[in-house]
Image 1 (cartoon, one colour):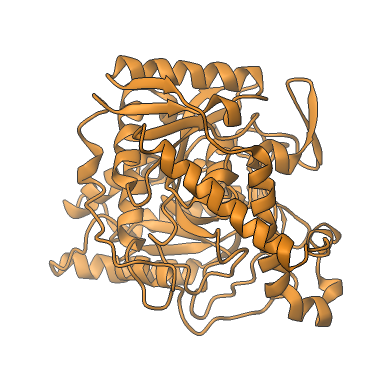
Image 2 (cartoon, helix red, strand yellow):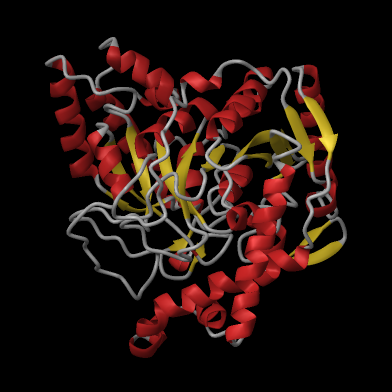
Length: 467
């Protein structure tokens, strides 16, 4: 039965549709794996076994009655502990919200439930999503399945670890500065931050209203397309979503990269890198060239200081969101997050300049995508660091974990463009290396098509740790 967890979403869906596999057996296989592995990995903070069995039984009955809903019907999933789930604690990995039981599902959770998914549980996150390690003082550190002394990345570290440890077939994360793509890179799976406004944030505990993006973390690009299809689309409860038509993402996977122009922004994304990361991404460029794409160097068109200045928007929004609890429950915050939320803010002119800097980055990206179809860059500067390290080494330079793991992902949050991380190599220590592809706003289809072409031409996505 445990072999069922080796199936991708697409593979499991095909077998379920043909009635070769029962959603009940699939759910039991995942629950057994969670029971065995979660004590060591700590990917899940809440396991909803009773709910999962009810979901699976319902799916099995519906399918037997000829009511098959599509490729997520009967598929076990995990949701980051930021997505409201009716009747199930949603605490954002915090002590502040411990015991909080939402009355309604978030829009994304509801859409996945309506697609027929089976909820295995809620996945661990950095406290209120403010970090890149998922070393959480309240819920415990999540461990990288490839090396238990290493971080899984953050803030959606539980979602990334759950996928690679085969404790869920698909998961949702959130991405404000890289929190979907960083865990995807460090765990060796696929993480897709769609365009800002493509998927609803309604019912998702925020880090930043301007930069938050919901999205899938899965084993393959096809699986990410399947999950994104279910959650994408306009939602009247989220002002940021737009009534832009949602294409058939799975159908868009095919066609290859022949004729695509892929830009390599070396000035902003390739300056300081672990040598093994640099080699892996350069080799990935060669694969795209062999597949027929034109790979060209481009100037990103903005200064790094613009990204750092724009990030003050996130700090300001975070302080505004947490203001009530900083007064009433200050002692319930970790010292790490309390320090982040206590940073002095600029005056009105400084904040206006921060918003202007974010517009400058957006405009630079717009100009870039007039010249190229996609951008290709490393996802993180280095592979996963040791749990507990606050400073890490990158090619002889010491950096904070935030700088080492989020510097290359943040610009795409500020620009609001779709960006996907997928595996492209392994370090000498056996740790995954990831690269990211970014595209024009609301052109997730081209990002998925190029990523799928690379995935089909390589074997990195097939590697899984022995657990």
